[in-house]
Image 1 (cartoon, chains in turn blue, yellow, orange, red):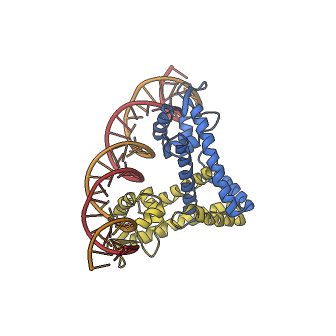
Image 2: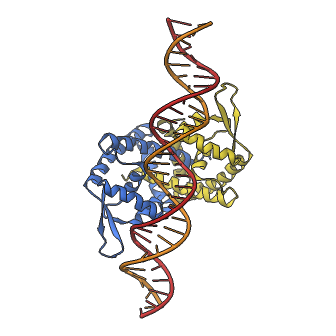
Image 3: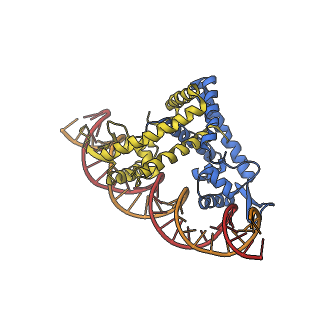
Length: 141
Length: 141
DNA sequence: CGATATTAGTCAGAGAGACTGACGAAATGG
DNA sequence: CCATTTCGTCAGTCTCTCTGACTAATATCG
């Protein structure tokens, strides 16, 4: 190093800090970084624990540990999966939806700061490039 | 979410996994992810613990904990700082330099994969954009 | 100079997060 | 229908990270 990935890491950490601070000051002060990272990968239609674990790149034990906490705090709920009696679908509950909304506020602000710094065109190119890289880098996709 | 930062996070994790695996198979199998992240931010001229902590975005206690391990494993050494008797300069030792060299090998491979996927031009734009964002995102700079 | 404030780093303790291994229950596929 | 795979949990351990308190050295300023 020092490779591109290191500077991406720095940028990510910066966003995470901003998001977490915004969530905390907005009343979601029981969320930890690890919990927020899990929740960030949860899609609208509900996911199984194993799926979520793969998407978040942690073991299913770790995912279960964090989802337990999110559930107890009211951010997500588990529903039976009609297709498989062993599995349950994890979805955002009301509190989770509201917290996601709040997170999106600050994300939009940070991205507009970046856009201001880079210019609209380069920011759009960055966004598109990173998204394209998912094909190579996202175990979930 | 899902914001740009989430996909950057995914890409970073992918690189970290690849680097760590490459280091492990190359004989540096005592390195942990947290240790490698610290070492990645260590510059050639030597840094103080407090500087390194700021750069890596952890507390100085955490930085000290990880540097202790890196030192015991022979990756770094601490030298007295001629400018300040309280401080010491942390530098890469021989083993650390060799490990960094090995890390750079795989980083170059991953970046060439990305370049192949995005094209030379877009990859260069990505690299430049992320580097430019340091002004907004890197507490060390 | 000398009192005060700041800075560099360490010690101690606690909590969170991450892993491996083993397991029961349900589903899948010959 | 039996063997295998998959879903999730339980148990245990280790690593990482933080807060708070502290010592020693340096910087500031009247």
